[in-house]
Image 1 (cartoon, chains in turn brown, cyan):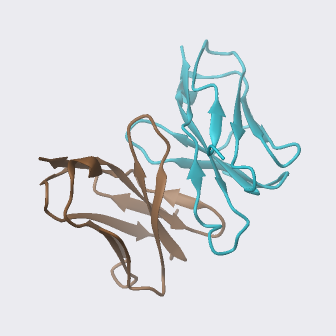
Image 2: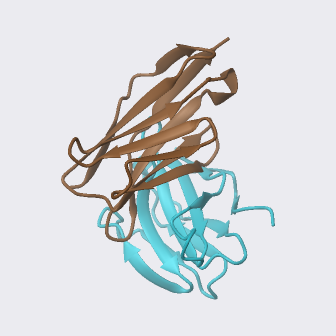
Length: 110
Length: 116
């Protein structure tokens, strides 16, 4: 079955550094990948989408890449801030629905 | 427009009881999705509607679960004969008919179900 895998260990970084989160997919080729942010007790919030024919996408301090050879997407937050602390979810689009990974918790310390 | 709303926000029920949740999507959104999320996991797709038509259901969705969207606006998710394994956050999301943004799903705050 199609799978989206994210590092389940929390990522701890210092304010100002770049955070890099990894998303790997197996058993299918998603037409696109999405990244969402989720805060405790709240629903996910859409951040970025990258299509399979795009190598890189940027939005303000966010950058996402899509490598179809490695079957991987990387999500970068530059100049990270404590307010960026949250769980980040990767989701792949299959035929008609989204498959989410478990998410990676990011903790940015001042 | 206040976004996607869900009611109730919390529900505690005894095993064997039926529960119903409601989702009100963003008004112009024609697609509506239901997901379930347990602690430490990502949202798991349950079902989705385009207008009033239920177009897809997860094979993981047991017969005890049923969803409706009678007039293509709000939706309800009912769980019959609840089991402790049904305890989870139930999330609703909606998306726009605009081709350029239809992929972006707007999530509600969720309904947290606890089955005792």
